[in-house]
Amino acid sequence: MLRPYNYINLGDYYTFTTDNDLEYTVTFKDLSDNLNTHGKYQVVDFSFFCVNKPIKMKHDPKVSITLLDLVYNFFTKNEYVLLFVCDVSDGKGRCRKITFNKWINQTGLIKNIASKHDSSFMELGVDYCSLIVSNSHPMREEIIDDFYKGDLFYISDK
Image 1: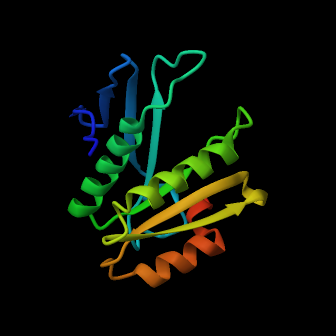
Image 2: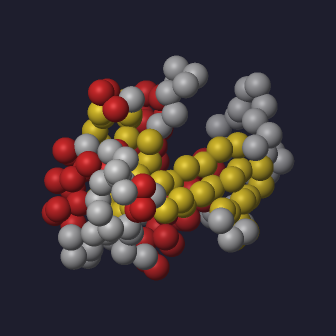
Image 3: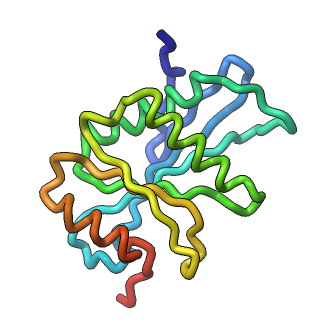
């Protein structure tokens, strides 16, 4: 069985380096104060990127294992709501969504602790996004409803 890469917690983000010397940065950014959720629950944006991305990347299954390990550990320590919005700026948003879904489904890593929901909000410029919410979150149903209504993407007026 493949093991995740060793990652380092650098406070605001995590970093890991692959066997091919590619460096990844992973962030969990709290968006709660900026959204129309009025502080009812915490919403965190999950994002990752390859710092020194080559022109052509080789498939490395340990990258997905590492990312999902970080997500799993995040949920075992927090009652947050996780948003994953696929970058579409290069035309590869749909591919990213398919890949992310495949990672989640193949590993089954979060299946017992959280549920994943998918949607798009074209009017808000959000083509492909996923919500991952802990199965034990006391506001789980309200959060899922808010997600499908698009409330997790509206900026608060404060």
